[in-house]
Image (cartoon, rainbow, N blue to C red):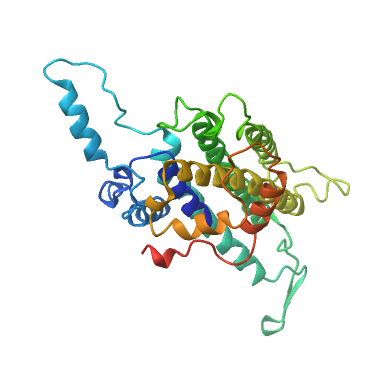
Amino acid sequence: MDTYQVISALSVEGLAGMTKPFDPRVHGVKPHKGQREIARQLWVGLSDSWLAVNEQDIERTLAGEMGTAAKAGSMSIEDAYSIRCTPQVLGPVVDNLARIGETLEDELNSSNDNPVVLPEEAEVFHNGHFHGQYVSMAMDHLSISLTTLTNLANRRVDRFLDKSNSNGLPAFLCREDPGLRFGLMGGQFMTASLTAETRALAVPMSVQSLTSTADFQDIVSFGFVAARRAREVLSIAAYVIAFVLLCACQAVDIRGADKLSSWTRPLYERTRRIVPFLDHDETITDYIEALAADLLAPEPVGDMAGAL
């Protein structure tokens, strides 16, 4: 999730997005902790970027074009939701992950025995501590959170590759020999397919109870299945996120990587050690595999301390 925040900032830079929607002052009117955290990270992290756009510059340009008559301006005053609403989309995920962590920690520090023997009370309790509803619902929420990340990444991929929505980038991020090359079009087939798959896998298991044991075990959690499914969604999501990271770095190179913020540059440079700028068509499977593995590595990427 920390890495995804940096990827989000790289996406803002690659798509020439505006930073004013991340100003902490406007997020002060909504008390959601995760939303405020994401907005602050993006606001501070992009403060020294020369690729992200200052909305006030656009306001001045549009004001100069308007004159005395109302008419369409040459620039948009708002970015698409996949950029502008990043704090509102990722904020719930951050809050959800925190709650999932608390739930699993509580569970790991619980007694799930049945019966529970309490010598100090001289009592034996036949109970239901073994029931996995907490774990099952936490894992369902994890799958939903990861699917939210893939949904957001998939929408950004589309903006990167569609020249009518990318603020000046070439179609399919194909700068060299356009019209003769595929560019990054093929990768979008993969992300669309995997995003659809994560959505199917995000159907909650915690509500799928089926009775067994002569109706004695008549409501069960399917917590193990929910956990196994969350693990599968994580592995799939890594590929979608890897591709949007590849697109962001390709876009940044086209616009000028020397203009990157100090927050996003380490992730850009790390990615470039795995994937070069693609100025000719080649199979990108190995690059995506390597990026996905790097994203799932235990070491953190894009240290937040550098921005904050």
